[in-house]
Amino acid sequence: MRFGTALLLLVPFLIVASFFYTRDSIHARQPRALSLSGQDIARRQRQAAAAAELRAAAAAEPPRPAAASHPEPLRKVGAGLQMDFGSLGVVRVNLRPEWSPTSFEYATGVAAARSNTSTVYRLEPGFLIQGSLLARGVKPNSKNPRGAKVMERGEIGWAGGSKGPDYFIYMGTGPAGWLGVPHDGTVWAEVADEASMLVVEKVSKLEVPPTPPGQMHILATRRLIGVAPWDPYPGWPPRERLLKVVGASIDRAVEACGPQCHALPRTELHGSVVSGGWGSDHKQPSAAACCAACEEQRARARVEGRSGCNVWVWCGSAQCGKQRHECWLKRADGLWAVVPAADGNGVKSKVDILVGTSDRWTAGSETAAPPDHPSGAGLALPVGAEAHFALVFANPALGRVRVRLRTAGAPRASGRLRAMLDAGAAACGGGRCALSRVAAEPEGWGDESRPDGLADGERWPAGAARIEGTFGTAFGAEAPGVAAVEPGPVQVGRGAVAWAGGGAATGDGPEFFIALAAMPHLGVGHTVWGHVVDEDLRRIGAFAKSHAGTGGALTFTLERLSAPLL
Image (tube, rainbow, N blue to C red; front, side, top):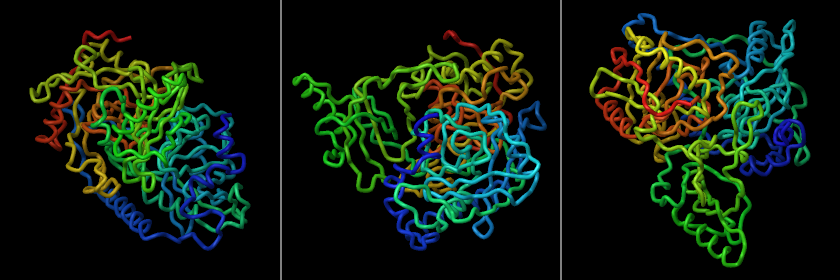
């Protein structure tokens, strides 16, 4: 078991006290369950209103046009449960069988029992709530196959690396990379919407007995909760209703950085702080200036015969607060080294890195990451000669959309695409493969001046900035023996091609989307299996602006290209 997991769930809570509770001390046990700042209240009101608007929109959403050969579009039926915390509200949960099939079976069994024997007993505001998922007559989860999943905001796992029944709901603002990439425990479900996350927050702030510093915060009496089945929101592909990264925004600071900076948007890189590089005492006006400071420190160190700065991290977003413009200069040896993955499926980064998932940091390094690095730090949009296949549209405004596969980072998806390419023109014949929806990048996408949320007019309007499609019945059977969770989780960047369905049902095809803009708010939960050639991406982005909402009749075929498909 990783040290991080043990620290999280088994031993005294040493780090979180100083990190998560600077605003509201966990040791000051005045009534604080509903003690909120004006900013908190406004934020929660926006979240609740956005969630209500999304639910209403989903219920009113008309059926989408299907491909010509599919009067009834292929759909997957999700499964869910709800956790009833009484007067505090109900938490709706999407179960994810592809993350852990036996956990899915256990959780659906508990829900079907419709009992009030489950509990919540541990509360760490802003971090997690923990309890037991129980029902009489439901057999324990004796086996525990699981996907190589990174724990993200709102996700639910078994506590302490166990098979259950003790669960925890993670409340952090973004992926918990410090729990491991991937997390070495079992993640098996996710909170379905922002309104449910508000309930989790309220539960986490129930009063607990006085607790010595550094200890877990345990209720005096376990609180019973009801668990019952819940049908996930209608519509396919499902619209996102939960931010995986709170406070995310489009990072404009990287645009001013030169190529020698190897700048990574919204990324934090770790390392040992070098002389003169302590961020609170070393502020710089821009990411480019921070990069230059790293170069200067490295040059001085080289003259003195020492190892100098090879990693810089700069804080420039609105989330930085007092940290704004801090420039940390660090040394990280073996930053881009890789090691075999624990499950033997490919390799993983030796240093746990989650690119593009920070709400505030811009980072860079002396050397560029290899193009195929598992973290995605070396990813760039391909040129035509690097593409493996193309979506060929009859509509000349779309033409040929060329795609390079992530053969190492997404071997399962790559194998299934290869099978379709091997089938030749027949794979997508008869209109099997088609676009279902076109949504242009809206004005203000990812802009910090807009409220952080998923509603229209907010920072990340749900379903926007993408082209959605399906491979329909051309999509082959599951690849045997390969986990549905791919080994190389990366962000959904501009030009990424990913499986749709990041909630409500298994996100494993045949529905896909092409991201017309960066989507850091989605975290790393979607399987990104390819990237579109830059010039083709610009063309389909222009198409989306003039053809928003169209689909169905926009069928395509597949064409294998000259780049070797390993």
